[in-house]
Image 1 (cartoon, helix red, strand yellow):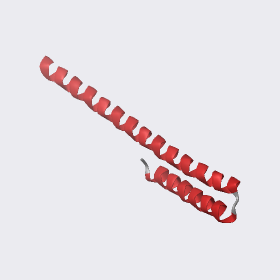
Image 2 (cartoon, rainbow, N blue to C red):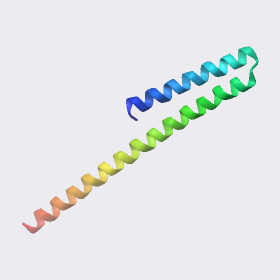
Image 3 (cartoon, rainbow, N blue to C red):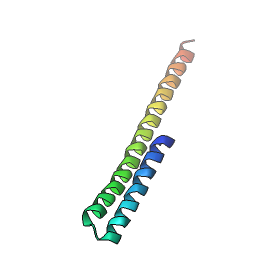
Image 4 (cartoon, rainbow, N blue to C red):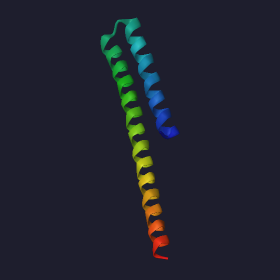
Length: 78
């Protein structure tokens, strides 16, 4: 996960916790629910960033494997 993505998710999570706590203290159920929703959004942002990282890693691994296969074929031809 990029640092920027991680920071955005962490900021969204903190914002949600603060909003949820404020809603709890004031008895404002809507504010509390919105804060909890922001925490869920932060978790989703983390999952999305992890999936992105894994996809990038998989593509890099596939690229390396293809390059290795090409080199092996070249070696066998020579």
